[in-house]
Image (cartoon, rainbow, N blue to C red; front, side, top):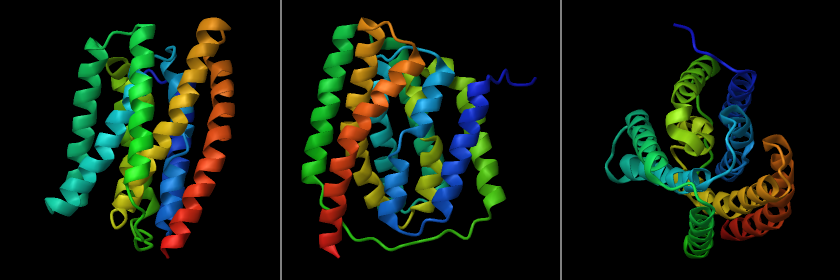
Length: 248
């Protein structure tokens, strides 16, 4: 049976494939992490899902943080090969996301409580986690193999998007490839997640306000959200790059 792909599902496939391919050709660990932190997949996935911003979108940031650190723990501490480590972590994301999407209330109060906790955790982690200099790496895995893996991941998420709800928008579609490409620099990748939390969090807040008070469409609220995101991400990224360069 063929999948009922929407136009935005196809755009999502193109965007994720493009980002995954770019990751293959960027050797520097910091720039790999920076590309991973750009919410292009979130943007297109939100349009594909067609649901207003709610608690599940914000909680997706926390479960994404869990995914990245679980891959790192399994691969570095438990010595699990990178592909099984990623597969296990993907399974955890899907299980946790599907469960929380069913039971977490979709009220405004829950949204703002979750957002406040997420932003606080992001700031705390960004302060506490030190920079580490990790080796540059460029994967020899052929691009067609990467593209096939990306197509498989996106297809699974399209099938599961109603079960995942807002968690679908933060699913590590690029992160699965990024974790493989950055398997020698997973600390740097993990440290990018708090930056994503404190930039994408306000983006979601702006989208929620636009949707509820301006009755904006999902597309227009994303434009508003991107404005907030760039206003925060630009100085935060500049500061982090300077600090990271000082470690050299």
